[in-house]
Length: 188
Image (cartoon, rainbow, N blue to C red; front, side, top):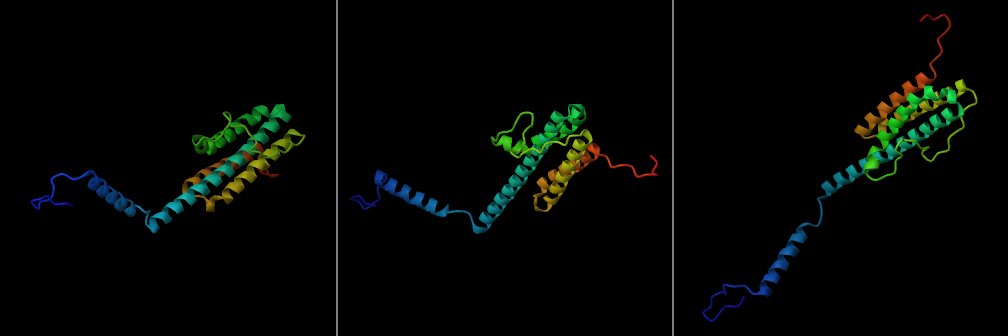
């Protein structure tokens, strides 16, 4: 800084001095904000990986539910006499699908209002007889329950609880669709 004639520092700072000081302060601040410590970055990456894993599990579970819902629709169309029997089970499957799609819908993904869709998978034609059609749906429910249980070890805690609940519901639906025969000689 310049000193005046008497050797004192000026009481006012020039514009150039203020700009230079501001630039030094900004550079210092930016140098201190180069990033998170490595441990913090690793924690964020782990959280991101968990979120991605949960999203993949949720998307796969939603696609499975959508495919099952399409099977219910195809069976009801092929066997109109079963439509009333299938309606509550279809509604349960649609509710499962809506729950699985809820976070994706919040993020702007496309979900049908009534939950119907085949998940992009081909829907197998229902068997010709009504009893065989019910058994095929029961087998689809049972298979879905087993696949959801198999996914539990890789699921984050909240998703594991949801998958376990859905697997239990699928197992019950399977049992309701095709109850096990009563062994001969057993009394009820």
